[in-house]
Length: 464
Ligand code: GDP
Ligand code: ZN
Image (cartoon, rainbow, N blue to C red; front, side):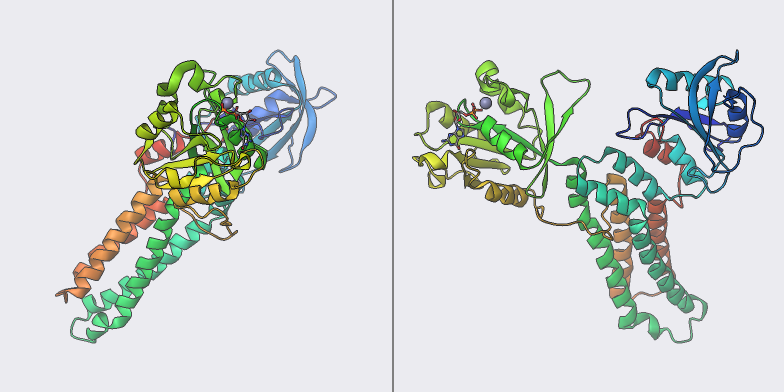
C-alpha cells in the first residue's frame, strides 16, 4: 500500500530516456530541501544555506563523512508548482550508474525513502497537478514503441481525453438540472421533459461515448502493435519477407527480458501499421526454426499472433510440407496466405488457395505487393493503416477506461429507455444520470479508491 497522505519524502533515480550519460536523482516531499542542504557543498567545500527556487547550482555531493562523491548540478523547486505538487529537488550527475546510486544512497540515509513504482506520478495526481487519465498517459508515453502511440499519449497527457470526458459530463449535468426542475416543480412545465430536446441531448451524449469507445481498438493496437507471426516451410522466403518489412523503416529491436534468448520481437511501422513481429529470431538465423525444431514449434508462435502470414513459394508447385501447413492453417480467420517470388513467375497463385480469408501475391525481392499486404493486415484487424493521429484526437487506451465508459453508456441507455417508456417520475431519470456521472468521474479520477490507485500506479517503473 502506498503512502496516500504523502507524508514521507521519496527519492529515486529518474534518468531521462536516451540520455545514458546523465543520471538524475529526484527527491519529492517535505524534507527535500533539508536533505539537499545536508549532502550538497559548493565548489569551495562550503555548506549552502540558501537555494533559490528553480535555479540550477553547480557543486558537489558529499557522503556522511564529508567525502566528495561527484560534481553535480542541483535544483530546488518549491511547492506547489512542481510536477508532484510538493517540494522537489533534482540532482543531476554526469557520472555513470554507480555514482548515481551512491548519491541516491546518501539521500536515503538522510531521511528519504525509495519511491515505489509510479509514486511520483501518484503524488502529482493526489495533489491535483494531473488527473488520472494524464497519469496513465505518462506511463503510456514511457512505454510507447511507435510515433503514433506516443502522439496518443501526448494528447492524453495534454488533457485532450479529459476535456472530452468533462464536456460529456457537463452536458449530463445540464440535463440533470433540467430533469430536476421536473422533480421540484412537478405541476409546472413537465412536458419539457418529454420534449424531443431531452432525447436529442441524450442521444448526442450517447454518440460521443460510443465514438470514444470505438477508439479503443485503435488505441490498443497503437499501444501494443499488431502481433504478426510469419510461418512457412524452409526456403519460401520468410527471412526475405521479414527483412523487406523491416527495411521499410528502421526497426526497433526489443529483446524481451526474462524469456529465452532466441525469442525476439521487432517493432516496426509498415506502411503506417504498427507491427510487432513475434518470434523472429528463428527466421533471422541462417537456418530456419522450421528446419531446426520443426513445424510444430513454428505453429506455436501463431497462437499469440493477431495476424499470421503463411508464406508459400509461388515459383514452385506446392510441396507435401506446404499442404500439411494448409491443412493446419486453413479456416483460421487471421491467416493471410502470402504467395512469394512473384518476380520469378507464379506456378501457384491466390486462385489455388481457396480456404483462406485473405491472400496476397508478392515478391520479397522486388517489394511488389508489400503495400497490398499492409492493407490486408490492416483489414484483418480492422485498422486504418494510413490514419494519422491528429494532435487533438482523444483515444482511449486501456481496459479501465473502456469499462467505465461502457458502464456510463449503459446508464445513459437506461435513461433513454425510461424516456421511451413514458416514465412516471423524473426521479428515475435523475438516478441513472447520477450513475453515468459517477462513472465519468471515476474515469478522470475524481472518485477513487486506494485499491484502484494501487493497481494503476503499480504498473509504472520506479522513478516516474
Ligand atoms: P526462408 O527459409 O523461408 O527464410 O527463405 P529465405 O528468405 O531464406 O529465402 C530462400 C531463398 O529464396 C533465398 O535464396 C532467397 O534469395 C530466395 N527468395 C526469397 N524471396 C524471393 C523472391 O521474392 N523472389 C525470388 N526470386 N527469390 C526469393
Ligand atoms: Zn529463413
